[in-house]
Length: 251
Image (tube, rainbow, N blue to C red; front, side):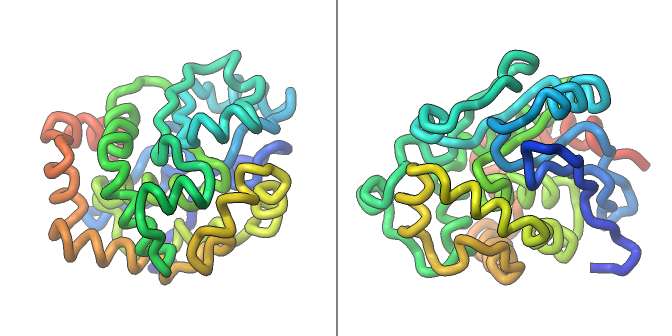
């Protein structure tokens, strides 16, 4: 990544460890991802009153796209943020909340990058739905999972790729979750759902190793030629991509 490129800006919150503005990145063609429109995060259920005021008054957050399963939501909840925004529940792994569920649904790969590609295949329609929401909803939005690095990382990589952000920037953005990884993992281990599931994941599940994102992006190219090729395969049309770029990019 160029030394001129700055990583996504943290939004300092008391109840989140990985909430950041995904805007600010430059595309290969010299356009800039507008700030203040799209955010990525870990779980939002621990937001404090001060956090809620900040998201409402400063960011004017209007939409939350929750990528977690219903089982996760049932255990840890959404928190009071649900009272002040529109919630879009778009689970990427619906019904998969334990190692037994995972084994019954798919063969777990040995590498997190391979798992991300499996996610792209298994959850292609939910991922496409998230991209459509980000393209067409007018108010600022955040998409999140539990840690804000795996399901959220795949969505971020797809979105940034479709906007034309260079691959090395996408990889660096993924690895930026390492900054607070210990706090993120400590919180994950407090929930029974995550304790049961994390042990079934490939080595590296508790990290954000850039090599995993490199593997994911390479496999997308091998299978679909490009992220745009994947987008066309799953039914995202030119209108969706045009609306996304018109909304999110500036010269």
